[in-house]
Image 1: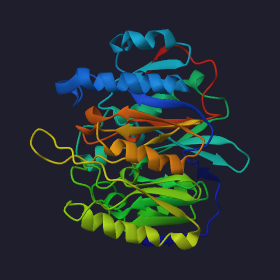
Image 2: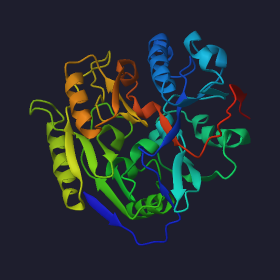
Image 3: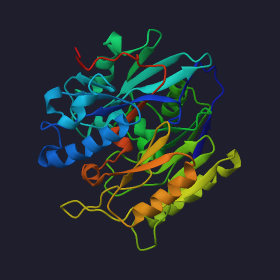
Length: 359
């Protein structure tokens, strides 16, 4: 593990996921996306996820056409659900969505980094515009909220984790992947992340590769801050599993964080799931979403789901744990956290419209 330390004037800092939340962002799957071959199945998953969110918080939902939403969501329109019609490529809101920051006086801001679909692997012409299209709708946002754009620097939300104390956890394989910011050296990339997100330290893991992961090693499938002192991480499976060696090395790296006052809680590795071609998919239990009074976590119709729930209870005492079947999502190499992005309190207006069309 490489540790980058910075001494700089910090204006605003990336907020941790457990900050008091107001809403969650989702992007609805449609037939022009990669979900076309299994649209009904994945829409059922999104419907259940949307309802789980709406029973607890507001939901900002982007989609090409509001008429594509299921009848179960209609009663929530204007009553917790705000639909913003705009073109989209895909559904991975964690990676193209805005990141939320706050300064010492509590003034909120958003930052929009460039999104090139994990190093130009897929089309992203619409998804790279979503933040700016949302920002262009003034009656969505509180008056004092600003959004800065850093479109020449490519960074996904799933690539970073913060403890809320100006420490960021990430992976070298993703952060320094050459198709994201090829003009910059690793030290320059790390410094830009720290400057943009108000970090004093970056902890950069060298290990943790998962089969089937097309993000080049997003941290949100490997190790997650649960609070400012707790890290839940994917533990090494048994030695027969192909992930054993790499995850063992990652576990050793994470142990290097113990002197910083963290406690480490190992999550079970999900049972292997394969696509139709026999290739393994990157299913883990680390891809959970923290909400105000609940944690939504992925399940895979496996005996290990219960073990994962029991472990997460150690990480989140007092929070309700809600499992969401994510077998549909994992077929496109993502899971629950990957399709969501939280909005802390203080960003969105309270009187959101039912439906609005973005420019």
